[in-house]
Length: 390
Image (cartoon, rainbow, N blue to C red; front, side, top):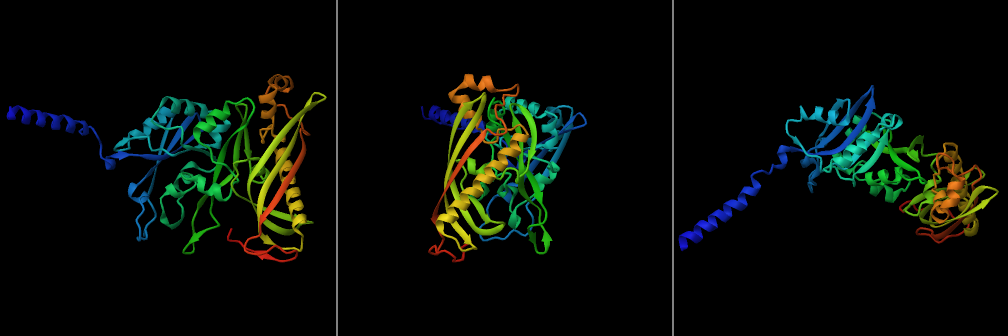
């Protein structure tokens, strides 16, 4: 009986151990962390960013002496799958796609409407998750994937892999998950967009040597499945004031081209109402937000400053509306209020591109800026505040 129990125990141990024989050690698998896709001359080009896991780990108390290694692979083929398979020929080890965190589309592939094949493949290939970040770029994709952040850290610390932290500090371009892009591009009413990445070569240097860093260069925008093109940051300056998920944005307040103050605004509240008159739709917008004074440069009362700030925000909102309308884009999703509440009226007014706006559709814009903080100082007309540590 004891012999049978011992034999059963040994068999049990062996049966549980065999489950690990097929597993691969982490050092024997290639894990792409980001991919980029381009299309030119009838061929797809797939770029793959591989990171060394030792460069991702935080080593407390140790200063890294070398730049974090970044491996960039490039595959070319008549289809996206062929381009990826071309990479397998030289990858040396198995490639597992479950750790991809970002995808970057070139402007060319968007212009030629060839990105759909990529989206369809990802839909079939379940290993790549929909939660990855989605971007576009005008730059060479390999240069975007090669850019590293400060202190020789891994690219995992850049906005390509971790865009939310930068957005919380300056909410200009909202990062987009791949699933959000796929859902919005199918919408009849609202535009879809990809944050556009570029490379800044001038602002930062390490030991007198220029260090390229990623930054946003605007958006590539779609309206009702149609690729519209690129809008730069200046054209989009009114966008943060019309989004309730804006966390924090600076606002420069001017009077007669002279800087009056710099405010830090937070979490605007937006209310949109629509009206149909003479066969056209009009929208009245009310925006309210809180703001703290970061710097004050001119003598002015709190009431006057609040009024000037509201006028500045209204001007920027109208400017962005005009620039987007010229491109056939409903940048503020105004038509959604009409589509949700009166779909029949929406379809009656919509053209073949499902666009209902006219040049004057943004009728009334009312902005209320509530000054809630003056930094470490008491607000006094004419007093100069320089509390930049907000």
